[in-house]
Length: 94
Image (tube, rainbow, N blue to C red; front, side, top):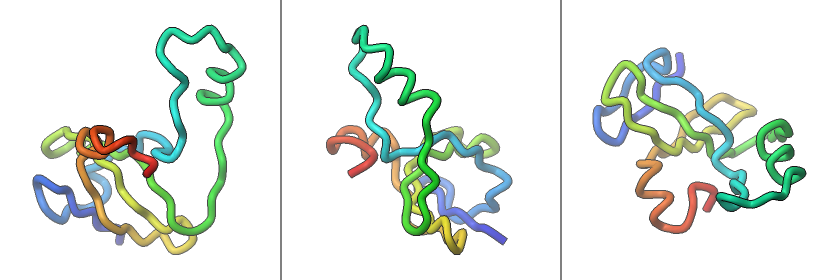
């Protein structure tokens, strides 16, 4: 059973969370007219094996977004932190 530790609510079952997206991808700048960059950001995804950062939302709890480190090979969750805090420190992918 996958258990995720929410920074605000503590350890909870993964069924309380919703996967958001890959947190390692950089979003194109707002207002850019580069359609290829937007196409790649929205429609192309990697399939990484091993440690990976992902956006998750605690939908049945505090409804906050978080960045979760998860090993995709073993489905083992690691540290979780606030997505807002991660963005303030220079991006969720770092």
